[in-house]
Amino acid sequence: MKSFNEISFKGEKALIRVDFNVPLDKQTFAITDDNRIRAAIPTIQKILQDGGSVILMSHLGRPKEGPENKYSLQHLVKHLEQVLARPVQFATDCIGQDALDLSAKLQPGEVLLLENLRFYKEEEKGDTAFAEKLSKLGTFWVNDAFGTAHRAHASTAVIAQFFPAEKRSFGFLMEGEVKAAEQVLHQATPPFTAIIGGAKVSDKILIIENLLNRATDIIIGGGMAYTFKKALGGQIGSSLCEEDRLELAKSILDQAAQKGVQIHLPEDSVIADKFAADANTQSADSDAVPAGWMGLDIGPKAQAKFAEVILRSKTVLWNGPMGVFEMPAFQTGTKAIAVAVAEATKKGAFSLVGGGDSVAAVNQFGFHDQVSYVSTGGGAMLEYFEGKVLPGIAAVKG
Image (cartoon, rainbow, N blue to C red; front, side, top):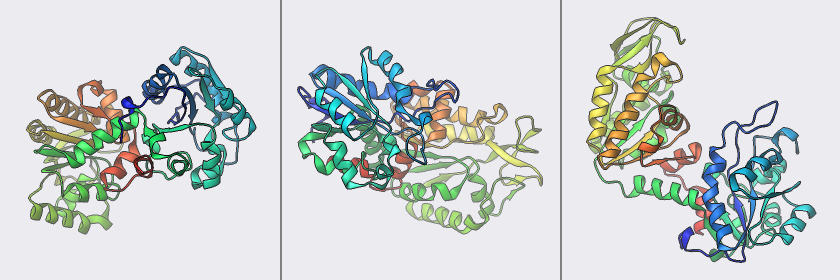
């Protein structure tokens, strides 16, 4: 498969599936965070510079019953024109006569944005007839929406059948995501450390099981660590615990021991007497949390131990925070991990941060440019690391 850069789009009408699902101000409909739009710009610019034209399709929000003004992509036009420094035409429908007419008249160098794909239920159902109607608008299909790559929707996967292999491709964003994910999952240089955080073991069980066959070290933090601590006989006070997953936690630890994978649990925790920013706090061993207290962050000993493991790694995957980092009192652990991952990267490790909350943490603490790759696709990245085939990737590769 040719890389995106090797393809010439001269004379092509590139139908690009982008992820413009951006947050809007409820009153003014102004964009409050345009990262997803900016992430797609290099792909759009390359096609325009080659002498092609661009037709952009995306969803926005979760419309329930057909068109709703608050979910209209019309709200993005002005901002898109500013970022691209050129006019952007808008089709009031993503299929139908208006879209057909505007795309037919599109000249090289011009940009057309289609109305919200999810105004049609057929998009999420992966309806073939709907996908075919979309395909009629362009001569070349580009999938640059990694955030929806795990969905077999009409525009993200089903549409591929209406374009020959040489007329479909990833954009720069998708290509970068796939390359980074494949490097970690299939070409990792050992030692390979996976840092898995978050609240629930049940949310991360598949990723942990898949990584047991690939990683040399797995660091477990966040609320899920206490289910493991209790499974080992520890006292965890009122810390988060999935009682129905204790046996599962034990079995993961047994599998890791059999496979020679080191599982690192937090030796100590920052504990609180309530789940609140103004709670009373102290440090305690993670398996000796007093009754009525709960662990909300990893403690200083755990921070030092985890940093030591990360710093000797050559490949690092980070998915999920170490504590309730949204509250200042419980962000030290997650910040310490961010510092260690940045330091390991500086020493030559390949580091991938993926999954909503760890991405938010890296951005909040200002480390996004000090790691190798920050993924834009939370659910998609998680499913990829669970070992699942993502429809949006498979459709392009054919």
